[in-house]
Length: 295
Image (cartoon, rainbow, N blue to C red; front, side, top):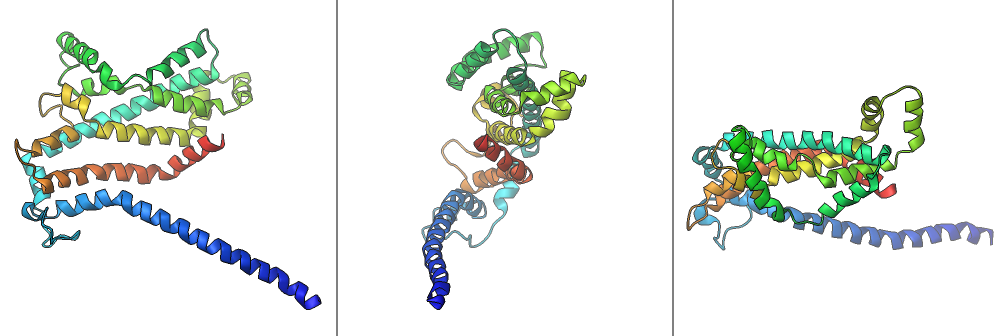
């Protein structure tokens, strides 16, 4: 009896281990397969960019190019003003991200921690605007930019400022940060006010460090949106001086043909900055998502 009592827990542990291992194996297998499916478009784009145009649709060709050719990358930098478009995209994206972090944070802090008449009503109206498709605003925005350019030639149509201005503040960012700020206890802010700290000092010394994960999440979402934006820069830019990278890449296409290796090479180069930004802010991004779930 004594021997059987000592063996029983081991047997139960083994039975438990047998039931857990297949479950983990299936889960990990599904995750690996899902990851490969999501990576496949990028792998296909990279493979196509290293092929010659005649080999792109060759049935006998595989994922690995044979032979490997870098002509598409050379043509991307020579056929179009790639450096100018890339610089324009960097300037526009940095300005949009920086202005969104600044203004969205200020607005979110006001809606979360300051009391003023009509606060909830104004916030509700802002949320309603999220349901309006952005395409509805294109015509009035364009007409406004034309008028602005006539008054101030350095603003409006065919300028980088014309691309930045409509997205310098976004309701989604205000909503995201406001929900995070609302989870911070009011007693912490009140204690700082009793110690003589002003609103700017509270925001800079307390709110910003606490909200770093949420701000990193906002930076990633805003960066992806600004970097990949195509429709509005296409409408507002009329020259190489104001074209961004997504718009400039369309110049690689001809009237009746598309050079797929060159198009995919431009796409691969465009993707690299997004991957770098995500890798740099990955930890903060995951913390922000986890904080939103737990709070």
